[in-house]
Picture 1 (cartoon, helix red, strand yellow):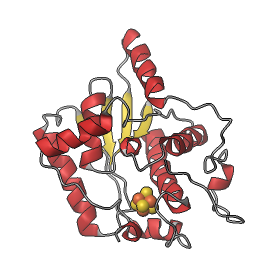
Picture 2 (cartoon, protein in one colour; picture 1 turned 180 degrees about the vertical axis):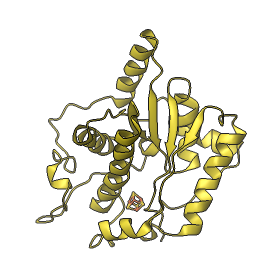
Picture 3 (spheres, protein in one colour; picture 1 turned 120 degrees about the horizontal axis):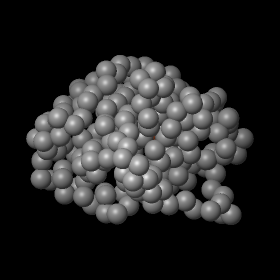
Length: 230
Ligand code: SF4
């Protein structure tokens, strides 16, 4: 399990100072089951005959494969492929084209919309300045999560979506608790609703690997930023 533990005397830049310490492990903290919480919310909406809109931040086709398969029955989904952390443009565009291909080939194109987003890797590079040598799973990744979810929360507000969420929680290498805390804090800030998740549960990660094989999806061997490449 990766822990977002800051080094002694190290401070996260604003806006992390407003977060309720998601970067340190608190043993006394009750562990939430985000997967169950999400399923309960889906069941409540279904019982009330609701089909809410969801702005889903997507990092890549592999992570999206299972998440879209799982959620499209319950939400009107718009994909937000906002990933300035993918610092090489060819890689950024290839991951996006694989995502579009998956949506088409899986027969989901009638259900999924795509939001227009900008590609500005310079924003990521400036946000993580000073954290270039941090190991994966450290403060640099927390800044990266915050940047991507913050953009999605803002778009959620502007577009009037019922919820926003991220596929990032499907990765065993990413801390769902940190992601969900950031998402919930941003929801408060923007006055929108965040759909908490832990998509790796219920064999979600396993299913994403099965789907990526079935559709021969590109499975990158690094997270995304240039600092994670070697
Ligand atoms: S390793 Fe991944 S999550 Fe961490 S900063 Fe780089 S792209 Fe973002």
